[in-house]
Image 1 (cartoon, rainbow, N blue to C red):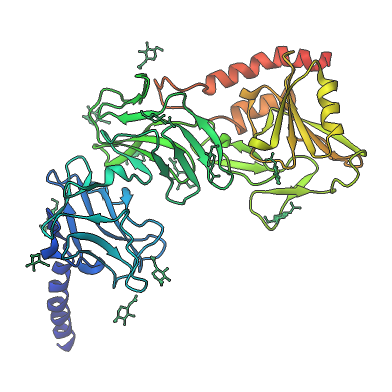
Image 2 (image 1 turned 45 degrees about the vertical axis):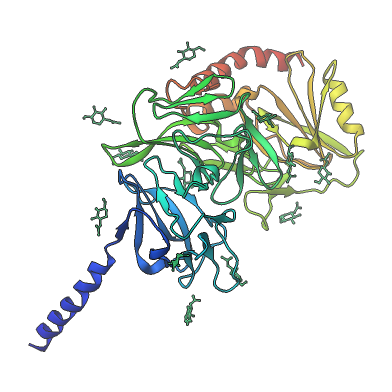
Amino acid sequence: MSLLFLFVFLLSSVSPSSSQQQPRNISSFSSVDSPWLPNQNRILLSTNSVFAAGFRPKPSSPNLYTFSVWYHISKTTIFWSANENSPVNRNDSLVITNTGQLRLVNSSSGVNLWPGTVSGTSNSTQLRLHDDGNLVYGSIWQSFEHPTDTILPNQIMQNSTILVSKNGNYRFRNSKELVYASYNDSYWKTDNAFQRLGEDGRVTKENGDSVVTSDVGDQNLRRLTLDDDGNLRIYSFDTNHSNWTIVWQAVQEFCTIHGVCGPNAICVDEQTQNASTCVCPSGFKPNTSQVNSCERKIPLTDLHNTKFLRLDYVNFSGGSNQTDLVVKNFSICESSCFSNPHCLGFGFKFDGKGYCVLQLHRLLFGFWSPGKEMAMFLRVDKSETDQPNFNGMTSLLETTCPVRISLPLPPEDSNTTTRNIVIVCTLFAAELISGALFFWAF
Ligand SMILES: *[C@@H]1O[C@H](CO)[C@@H](O)[C@H](O)[C@H]1NC(C)=O
Ligand SMILES: *[C@@H]1O[C@H](CO)[C@@H](O)[C@H](O)[C@H]1NC(C)=O
Ligand SMILES: *[C@@H]1O[C@H](CO)[C@@H](O)[C@H](O)[C@H]1NC(C)=O
Ligand SMILES: *[C@@H]1O[C@H](CO)[C@@H](O)[C@H](O)[C@H]1NC(C)=O
Ligand SMILES: *[C@@H]1O[C@H](CO)[C@@H](O)[C@H](O)[C@H]1NC(C)=O
Ligand SMILES: *[C@@H]1O[C@H](CO)[C@@H](O)[C@H](O)[C@H]1NC(C)=O
Ligand SMILES: *[C@@H]1O[C@H](CO)[C@@H](O)[C@H](O)[C@H]1NC(C)=O
Ligand SMILES: *[C@@H]1O[C@H](CO)[C@@H](O)[C@H](O)[C@H]1NC(C)=O
Ligand SMILES: *[C@@H]1O[C@H](CO)[C@@H](O)[C@H](O)[C@H]1NC(C)=O
Ligand SMILES: *[C@@H]1O[C@H](CO)[C@@H](O)[C@H](O)[C@H]1NC(C)=O
Ligand SMILES: *[C@@H]1O[C@H](CO)[C@@H](O)[C@H](O)[C@H]1NC(C)=O
Ligand SMILES: *[C@@H]1O[C@H](CO)[C@@H](O)[C@H](O)[C@H]1NC(C)=O
């Protein structure tokens, strides 16, 4: 009896509060609605109900909030935030002041976290969410001019636009190149800057060329996002399954993205989309104090007492810390490295064109790729007994290409896809014949 009473009591006390949980939809935010607090559970909807804006708790710390815009149809797809890196707590608020200034204030420091100083003509200026996902304050400020990690259809990309991945590790700089922030190093570049993503899946570039998605022509909801893994992707919303599908991506070989592995390690692509393994080259062991990186087993102390280990199909892309040479033959490349006290190894191609790149000071962004058709000669102490662990030409070939190591499939029909698994495996076969010959000759 008392249980039943308790039950009825609970029900009656729970139901009003759960109806309060239902978000209150607003079509505009103006000074009469001010202040807007994170726990008010209010959302600003676009007229077509496709987009929504409001406070969102950080997934990592639910007591901190960002003021964000997302796709109403898939709440997890946040594509713009006013304060991604400086979330506010539940006492903070979005306000429109008497003078019409839009402010997202940190109550403890008083700092305005809204991007840019935004002052309307009066306190009747409104914040609205347009049907294309553009968050607009009066006629003076729009989120499309302050992109974070995503570009939406019809949002103009300037040659000064910079997208930053949510984790802050990567940038898409000048609508043109992908950069690893810690080293300011570019690992992917398009000749002509991107300008606009069309609803039909065509990205126009500044010279009029275009990049097309695998579903070009379909009218889908789309977005161009710089993901936390450093790849730039275009997604289409699949209404049948209510999820986002990748229809284009900039980098096909995940391991060529800088920063996937740490210093000295060699990245090897796995079969699944964006997975990889970091392997230590011969003469190195995992560095226990830094994940995915390696350290020497025997430190290089006497540079005259060193030798080189050949690692097939391995490349290090240390950016400014490498020297590109054109040399007559292998011995010249080898001795250039040997005589340079900073040289830790060199990359060489056996195609007779004299490609020779010295790695100076550090070994960064190493990766294994048959597409590179080169070998890395790693400088180790003469007493090192490890045998080379990347023997691409012959022995690894049969075992790795179809089985363990293979490259991700690019989206179909993508005109910018430069390399795909077919080419790579064909290359493998071609290498087996010509490459093996070269190495035998050598
Ligand atoms: C808010 O809008 C959404 C989508 O249009 C709708 O499902 C929901 O019922 C609305 N909520 C209220 C309280 O009107
Ligand atoms: C808010 O201000 C306090 C005190 O100055 C500071 O510690 C905190 O990091 C600030 N938070 C944000 C989100 O800026
Ligand atoms: C919010 O304000 C209340 C009352 O001033 C205070 O007790 C509480 O600690 C504040 N919460 C946060 C997260 O700052
Ligand atoms: C907006 O401005 C008018 C005139 O300046 C003022 O009377 C009114 O109180 C203001 N409204 C708010 C909400 O501050
Ligand atoms: C950006 O575009 C403007 C005008 O289109 C041009 O004057 C400027 O040189 C460009 N800047 C870069 C870095 O390409
Ligand atoms: C990164 O490199 C670019 C071009 O090389 C340069 O313009 C920019 O100033 C650099 N940024 C930093 C923070 O060093
Ligand atoms: C969704 O389903 C329709 C009808 O079954 C089909 O024609 C369409 O191709 C599907 N779209 C996608 C993206 O799978
Ligand atoms: C979308 O959902 C369908 C059905 O649940 C699933 O088969 C498909 O793999 C999903 N696509 C993505 C990209 O997650
Ligand atoms: C890439 O991997 C990360 C985690 O490793 C995952 O969160 C993310 O969704 C993946 N992205 C894609 C496009 O597969
Ligand atoms: C191992 O990693 C730590 C942390 O990054 C670094 O300080 C140290 O120099 C590394 N050790 C070697 C031998 O490279
Ligand atoms: C190469 O890297 C070292 C640190 O590893 C740095 O001190 C040096 O300035 C770099 N050289 C160039 C040319 O960037
Ligand atoms: C790919 O590019 C070629 C010209 O380079 C063009 O003829 C073809 O139509 C493009 N394919 C698609 C799907 O746009």
